[in-house]
Length: 247
Image 1: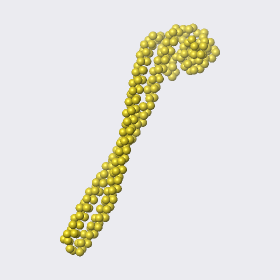
Image 2: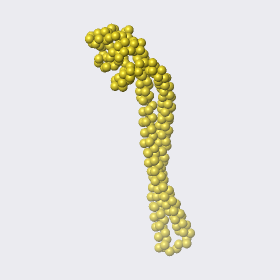
Image 3: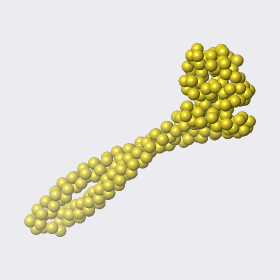
């Protein structure tokens, strides 16, 4: 394939634009904010599940606490009624008095047990409410991190996208000025060679594979016509000769 030296040098300009686009794309994919957003969002999901569990437990404990409080109120009401009867003197039968006193003692014991259970449940409610408050604060912190990372990501992506658009515009202006066959060859090599389709020969070294040309290869390149499109024998990339090639 033939292409004048100036055209081959412009091919290096095209390669530089493509390399810039590749670097920008890699930078965009590798932004640390993406990992932060993914990690913190997953943590938020786990946290929300924990909140649901704690709220469910709190609801169960609260219902039991209210039931105990209602039972305590019933016991107190009945004990007050029995005490009033006992103190009024209306009950004179000794057997009935004994039964009434025994019931008051039983109610007192029952009230004590219920109050102990209610106190335990009240402490459990306080503990669960404290956990919910801590989880709410943790969630707010995580959401703040997600929001900050999202803002930073969007800002950086906008900058990268703007620079990429500029490079694509330059590429679109340059590529049609090069021979179609040369660009086709270059792009085919670029796809199969890690994004580098053309590289300069600097100081007898291919800048694509970074290997120094052997004596025979170097002599072959030096002997090739200046408009001959040569390729590196090692990596098969288009090898562009420059004044610094060392030929």
